[in-house]
Image (tube, rainbow, N blue to C red; front, side):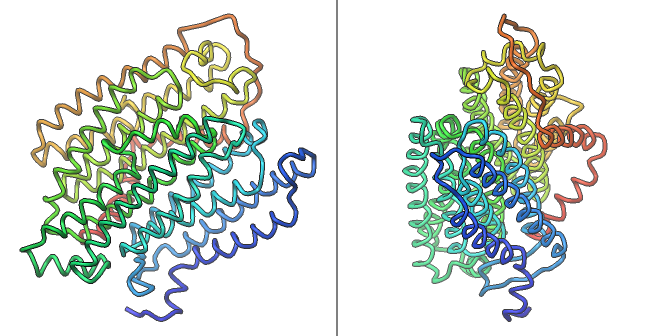
Length: 495
C-alpha cells in the first residue's frame, strides 16, 4: 500500500474536483449576483444559473466517482479510507443531493428565498458528507461533521423573514454545539488513554489490551451519544421536530435525506472497525436507543397536526429501525440496516417531493397542517395517489419495498435471539401505521369547498417521483440488485 501523493490524488479525484468547483462557484456568485432586495430579471437569471451550475457540478462529481468506484486504499496518513462502503455511500449521497437541488429551484422562486449562497452551502455540506463517508480517524470524522453541520445551521435559518426559521437555526446551532462538545470530550479521553485516534490503531489496541479500559469505554460512550444526536435518535431527538418545522421547506428536504447517510457510514465504520470482536459492550446502548426511538416516534406522531413535525417523528422512528438492525452486531444485521437505509431514503425523496409539488398550488403554499391537505385526492388524484404509495411503503405495506426492508430487519433480529424487543417493535409498527392511514384518509375521504389553483407539476419533480415509485415496486419483486449492493458495502467492514 503506497502513501504517495499521486495515489492520494487518484483516490480523491471527485472531492478535489468538487472543492475546485466550489471555489470557482464562489467567485462567480460574488461577481455577478445582486442583493436579494433587488428582485429583478437579472437576479432571477443568476438564481437559475446558480442552481443549474450546482446540478452540473454534482453531476460531474458523480461521474468521476462512478469511474473511480474500484479504487481502494488508505490515504492521507490513514485519515481516510476508500473502500466499497465509502464509494457506494458517496454515490447514493451525490444522487440524493442532486435531486434535492432540483427540488429546491421551484420552491426558491415562489418563496423568493433567492441567493446563490444557498446552493454554495448545499455543495459545502455535500463535501463534508463525502469526507465523512471515507473518514477512518476520529479527528477527520469530527472535522467532516463540523463542515457539514455549520452549513446546515445556516440552511435552517435561511429564511430571514420568518421567526420560525430564525428560531430553528438558533436551536440547531446551540444543541449542535453541545453534541460537538460531547464528541470532543470523548475524543480527548480516547487520545489521552491510547495516544492515537486512528480506527485501525484503536482496533489493534483493543485486540491486545482487554483489561483496565473502563475510561476508554466512557470516551466511546460520549462519542456514541454525539453520533446519536446527529442522527436525531432518542433520547437525543428533541431538536429534530422543531428544526424540521421551522426551517424552509427545501432546507428541510435536504436535512431529511442527505446528512444522515454520511453519519450512518461513519458510525458503522467507527464501531465495527474499533470493536470488531467486542461490540457487545455497546449493543445494549444502541438497542435501547433503537427501541425508544421507535416507540416515541410512533406514539408522538399520533398527536401531531403539522405536516413537517409528523414527518420528523416518522424519521425518528425510521432511525430506530436502522439502529435496531445495526445493534444485532452480525453481518446479516449490517446487511439489513443498509437495505433499510436505502429504502428509507428512496421513500423520503418521494414523500418530500410530493410536498414540494403541493407547494406550487395557490392555497397549499401556506399549508402547515394536515387539514390543509383536505380534498387533494379530488383535485390532484395522481399526486395524491403517489403520496399514498410512499406512505404505505413507509408503513411497511406490501407489495412495496418498505415491507421487505422491515421484514428483513425483524427476521435478522429474531435469528439473533432478540425476541422481546422484536415483538414490541412489531406492535409499535402496527400503531404507527395509523397516522399514515390518517393522512391518506384526509387526502381522499375528506373534502371542503376550497378550490385550489392547480398548476402542472415541475418536470424534475414528476420524473423523480415516477422513478422512486417504480423502484419501490420493482425492488420488492426483484431485490437481488439491492442485496448485492448492500452485501458489497458490508463485507469491507467484516471481511
